[in-house]
Every structure is written in C-alpha cells, then in structure tokens.
Amino acid sequence: MAINKNHEFEDLDGIKCAIVERNISAERVQFLKSILIHNGYTVVIVPATNSVAKNTDGEATVTDEATQPQLFTLGVTDVTFNAINAIFGRALKTEEGKIVTLAYWQQKDTTAHDDIPYFSDNSCMN
Image (cartoon, rainbow, N blue to C red; front, side):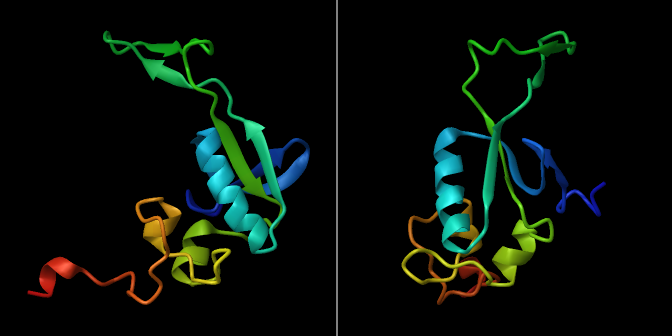
C-alpha cells in the first residue's frame, strides 16, 4: 500500500518496484529509463493494463487496444525511490552531469538548467 499518491509501489513482473510513472509512451519510457539507469537504478518496464475511457454518454468502456497507442508502467527496484523527492532534492543527474530539473524531467526543456532555481518565476521579476 502506498504512503500517498506520490509514493506508489507494486509488483512488476514479480519484482517489488516503486512506480515512477504509469500509462506513458515508449518515447517517454526511453527518456526516463536513460536518466534512471545513469543514476544507478534498476528499471522495470511492463505494458500498462487496459485503460477505461468514458464515451459521450458518460458510460465507462474499455478502450480497443488496436486503436490505442501502447502504454507502459515504469518502476525502479528501489522501493524508497520517489520521483518528486528525487527531483526537488536535486538527487538525479543527466548524462552531461547537470542536475535534473522539473522542466527537464517533464520534457519541457531539452537541457537541464540547474543554475536556475525551480522556484524562480520570471513573470514576477519585472
């Protein structure tokens, strides 16, 4: 059982894992996998279970796997891992040796600007 929604863990392929992200694309898997392996974590990836979608009438329907892109669940074998703590605790590094920032983790930036504090808001600097 998870402590809270940000620290989930479960068995993936029979291995107890901390869940990093669920329902992610193959491209996102490769991005996160490279960061986590570089930082010494053992990564476990499994296909996501069928997702439930709501149709226009508001009824829940199981989506057709043939029309949906393949999604995955990514976890690490270190059950103490928490992505939020790792990012804001500046515990993860890129392959270039920079600190992984939230924008880099979310793939909003292509490079980690670890010289800019995560709490910096350029809109209030005027």
